[in-house]
Image 1 (cartoon, rainbow, N blue to C red):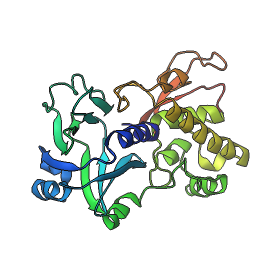
Image 2: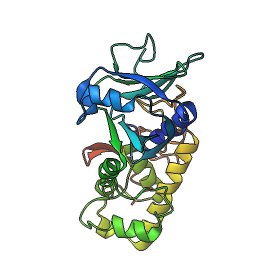
Image 3: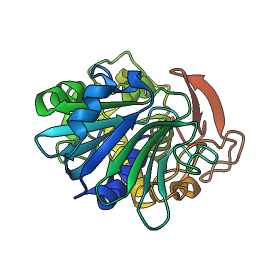
Image 4: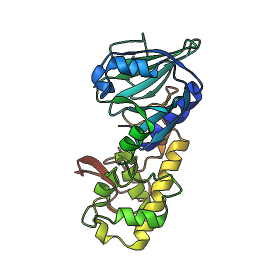
Length: 288
């Protein structure tokens, strides 16, 4: 699943591509993806609405529309947003389904959005886990409010992080950072990388950490996320940017996806175990 840097990259690039455009029409091929609205109501409500901007909250793309409406998009595991201008090359963001951007609409297309300028935005999803919600501001806030503090927000101070992070002292670091109700947008890649940078094992209990270690982890989370956004995300397994390019952060990965390869810091073989329901990578020598 795309994590915070990947969704942020898609949102920023889509913001440039579709801001200012007006929806002319829409087609919903999989009605369950737009619940609780019916496909008919969804199409009727989005028609003639103008895109005011595109942003991100947690792992959700937020498309702000005129008339105080919002189109929320969750890519889940295999979702794609594909923008096709009237003239020029299509741009793809999300899971790089083979040939997913060709011969559109195709077998993976779940929704189509036509703009008045002749361009089109497609939502493709191989496994149909993603969703689209057209909501007002109150409904948007209800959907987004359960997510925790944004790790790139100014509010993500060391004090706030410590307060949130230590709420469940018997959980492990990875279990805690995975909890989207506490901290929004983190996933497997950046948790493993942040723990490596902070020199702590992701399997340690929160109660075992010193104030210095918590501070190092806070700094590492912010640094890893900022670098990944700068490099337009990670290309590991299933992500490309909205311009169809693979993310550039993969060459900066120290532990994730590098099981049995030498640690870049001490040359010890990187360990990989299953923890918190995910493959977990770390260096037994560098991380304590």
